[in-house]
Length: 192
Length: 313
Image (cartoon, rainbow over all chains, first blue to last red; front, side, top):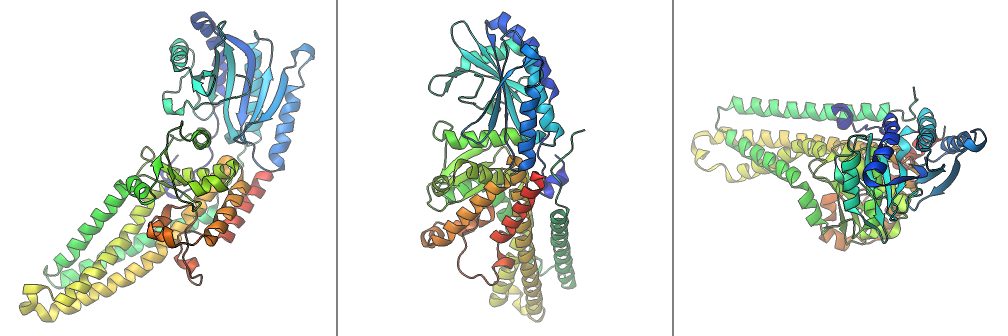
């Protein structure tokens, strides 16, 4: 943001970075090898719906787009709104199709961005699970172009040890968010 | 190439630029007048100007540097952790992620008056404070609108901008006072030699300062109102929900008018007005549009309605 924009109070919504997401499949492989965490086959996109007809139209378009695949290639999509008023699109595929999952997520992103609603994208997450039952999400922050791990335990506490362990494992594959204060919790997010 | 839905408000930008330019012009004119007056009478009168200017710089810098501590203390606010206020932190986390901003500290003030303010000298020192009354009255999406407005104040560095802008007013006000007392008490030892000269000079300095103070006061208030509109705008675009912010504004200003202002003035709420979401107004509406730090509710709602229309197209 430029000096003049600040001085004149005309900060604009930030456009998302969509490309970094494609490095996720390779990180999924590393994660399984290093920490025994396997993808659950669920991914979700979170965005802040803007008011008005324009956004509602786009949202419908996105849902139709995802339902358009051929035969068995169609992902299952669920839509929900969380208590903060953010919309979550939950996309499910068989657990081994991480790459297809990321492509689905990207389809949502680019539809919103093409319609001019890119700034409404908040984050996207891909779910992982361990044989012992631990849950983990790799969260992608659109505005930063970075990822962070989020491991919830019961009762709104976080498994920080697992998160840091995962950070160490996937540092080489993904740009990890360096500012820990931005690793915000997404309790009860669909796809976890 | 993705198109953008967020057309800039050129009119607002132009008016804000003009206001800042005029403030700068008054400042330059003020300095030139002081230099002119003082150089006409050797250096004997310089002390009367130098001290208020130094004091003004000190006061301005102090209130800027410790803005977070001063404002929090005045509002009797306490900083809260994510464990103490998970909802509030959750809303702010999401706004920060949407806006790509570092997370500010979060504080709650135990007042019944529904309001919020942002302060702190830079985005690392920023604090966002909401009152208990606000948390009680607004639903979560309205709260989000208010917090997005406050985050926009942080992004626009409004504490710094308004401190610099008010600087001129502070110095002019101090000069009025100093030259007034200087005139009353006649400057001590100098009375014998240049008594004839000293009096009119102090008088001229006082008159010039009064004029500068009056003009800068109006300009600063104008600038403050424009910056509120800018924060409304950025906040509404950030969440994509201008109508939620509008409904929060309506709720908050409705309640503020109903609540008696006695106890809150005792706790110094008026001093904080410049950074509040909605000002705590005392009586008198006639000149309030010219003198107030915030635009009228009607004006803010009209601007938000415009944004809502733009978003829906």
